[in-house]
Length: 126
Ligand SMILES: [Zn+2]
Image (tube, helix red, strand yellow):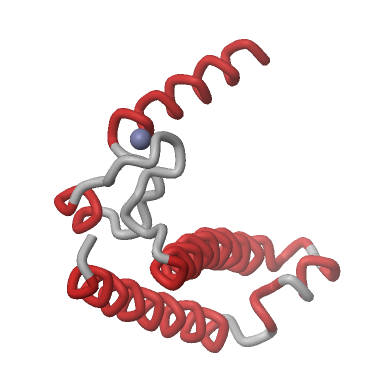
């Protein structure tokens, strides 16, 4: 991957990170009391709906912070020059795939293989 492409994806990831951070910040501000982590411990019968909303916020923030971690990891890979290479086979992930999902760590065949293995591991546990 060329330096120009690195900086393109770097800018893309930084824009995504900023957008996610803004969303997380807004959600935290909107939910007031620190996201309901605190008020979950003082649950009473009549605030079940508020709790459910707080839990949804928590779930969203957890999902968004996982996305943020993926973005941070992708930015780190840009920093060390490994961005755009598959972590399993080392081949180039491919521009189209990276444009569709800039935080991808695996090429498509390896990603599919990984998902197959996970599905198999999951069904083995059942
Ligand atoms: Zn691969």
